[in-house]
Each structure stands twice: as structure tokens, then as C-alpha cells.
Length: 213
Image 1 (cartoon, rainbow, N blue to C red):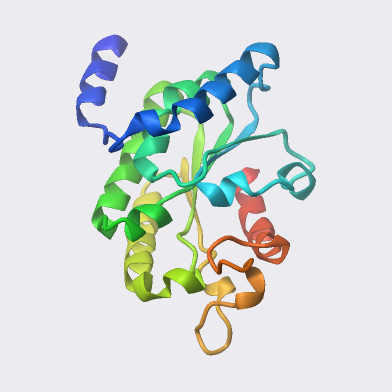
Image 2: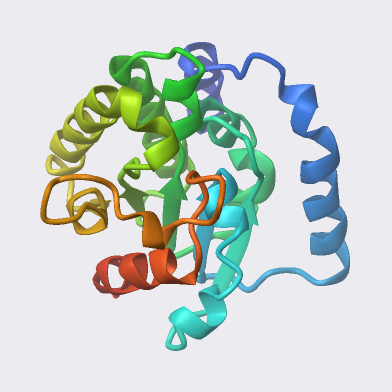
């Protein structure tokens, strides 16, 4: 029955436009796992470049065993596609996801992003029913401020979806990254005004931490 469920699940899950684009990155993870298997029941961080560049994870969350499996430039459907290789085999206690930002920039709708997140949760919970999935909201980057309405809508849709199941959590980092005038805080970003510096991650850390308990 479980095998049949997985078969039908595969028919409805979103497919990335070009999964082979990430083959080298995923193969690198697989090779590393073969020689140094990640611990079970850890906290897995997965997603796009904001995860890749979060190099201080172990220091920021000292009470948890953490695994970083971000691959920069990826979209949410890419993480769904590769869960069987860089998530499910680890049997993580919590999966923390940051993705969707690149999707909106590429022209996907907030509804598509929310649907892809639902597929992400479905695939995780089909294999690992007790694992918690935590979504970090799309961030308000100065370089993508022109599509802020899409980011806010995607966040609202995903927050509502997360509220329906205690195994799902939503981390609202949007408002804390805005100034008193409601504009993105440039001091939280590196020169490209897209990726964050250590100050940006310092905003995220205390907001994510309660979801890891």
C-alpha cells in the first residue's frame, strides 16, 4: 500500500524545469554522505542560496545537530524533486526550508509557490510522518522590492497552510527585516541587495530557534 501511495504521489508532485541543472551539487552531497553519513534526528536546512550562505548554522543553533543541504539558485520544486536524496534518507527531526524567492522572480505565481510547498510537506510526511516542516517566509530583498506584493501573498498563503497542521511551522521574517517606514533594511544585505550578511542572519536566528524545539 505504501509503495502504491508513493507512486500516485509522484504523479502529482511538481517537477523542476531542469533538474539536471543541480546534478553536480546533489551528487556532491551524496558522495559526502557516503563517507560521512549525517546524523539521524537532526535539524535539516534545505533550499536556495539563503540556506547555502548560512554558514554559521552550527554556531547559531548550538543545542541542535544541524545539516545544511542548500543549493543556490534553486526553486521550491527543486527541493521537492531531490527530497529522496538529500532529506528523507537522513530521517531529520525538523526540516527548515527557505525557497520561493527565486520562483517569484522567475515569474511563478504566489499560488504556485504555495502549491509547491504543500507538495514538499506531503512528500516529507508520506515518508516521515512525525517530522516537522518549518517554512522561512520569503524575505523582503531590496533588489526584488518591485515584486514585494507577490512575496507577501505567497507568505500569507503558506502561513495559512501551516496553521492547519501542528507538524508545520511558519517563520515570519518579513516584518523584522523592514525599517520604521516599511522598507527593507539595507544593512542586512551584502552589496547585491539580495543575499544577506551576518546581520541578516542574526535577525533570522532567534525567530527560527523556537521552531526547533
